[in-house]
Image (cartoon, rainbow, N blue to C red; front, side):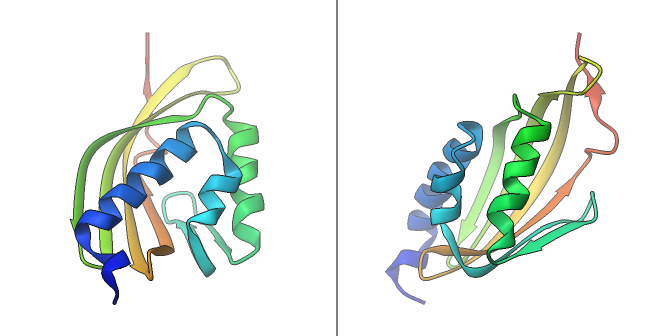
Length: 128
């Protein structure tokens, strides 16, 4: 593990990663992934790996064009980040929804090896 995997550096990387998700900047997101990266949403039962990940995230953005995340807590240690967040988006019926979740990110050489998503997306709150 190099200096690029220190807790302080990983916090900076995840900050950039979260900003890219909120901007729906697919190129910036994918640039922070290690080759062969695995994206797995355990709640939704979705999994993509390697070259498939960019297209998978692109479909998420197509389905949820106003999807945004607000960080609640961030836990970083060397080689690992756990991020608690709240997401908001508009569903196909025009309702504003909100749900909470956690991402677990193992890193290697400053790049994300996996993004494991656990969320309450199956039980979103409807916003006024």
